[in-house]
Length: 183
Image: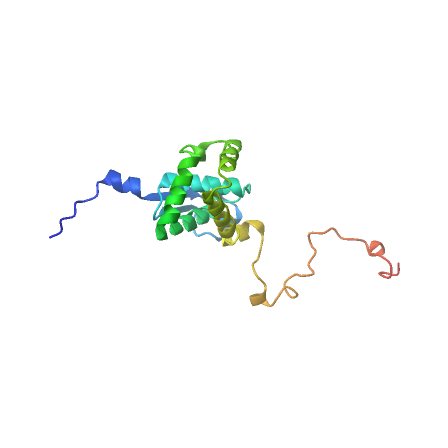
């Protein structure tokens, strides 16, 4: 017979965390996502800490129109690192406490000022590198920015639009320079 006492619901909810959100209808991610809602279960950090990390990541790498789901991947990576390493967990918890409990709800200017006060810390350097590494290597960010991914497995760039200049205006042949078009 087990002598373990059950964990009170309040303690369980305080110790576990879930960060969730909705995708914007008509956004690039909504075209490839199976649904509009997303949720991220936290393993080591609380929901409040996850929301603060999401806000901090968005402040470090701000992109209007980029879904919170992309920034949630940063939170997921930091939470996984905190779950795997007690030093990382303590550093993240301490760093988040230093930013304050209301960080996520502050104005962008106030969040920037708060991050500037800790930018030399190990916590900020870890947060910044995690944000850059995880945000910009995600399929969500690729879809948002229009990046189609590496080209090697698809035949290389020469056969995939290397010379496709649709983003430039058409130049009349006579304006193309000497030796081109009889000029």
